[in-house]
Length: 189
Image (cartoon, rainbow, N blue to C red; front, side, top):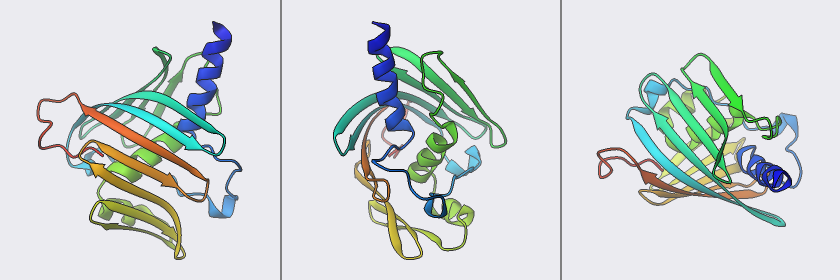
């Protein structure tokens, strides 16, 4: 059973770390966003099911996400067990991980990809370094570096998105369920 949990944790780590078949060169690494929770502009209370598609593997993970003007909190679940928790207050990212959860999983990468998907384009663009650009056209966000497409995020519905990390050759399908009181007004994906 412990081996199965470790395998599931490793699979989840690939999802969260944005694993690809080969790591991106450091000069081409996607910038790590550190946007204030208040910049989101709305509270979130979501349950998400993530499915990773990468060459040679398909993996799944569940996430509980809560955000307000002061904090972003995430609980990562693998095989029904809490694998990791993240708390971002706009200054400090606090992580706690289960002993069986791979230490390589980067909370900063998880937070950055979350913000790239959910935060307003203007806030993201203001935080990107020179040469990087985020454009939103309808339901599609495209992140480029010096004109080359790095990531494409497509909202297929108010609670469904595809995160296509082209440079690292993986896709995430993000299925969300709003646990808040006002699901109709939220557009979490």
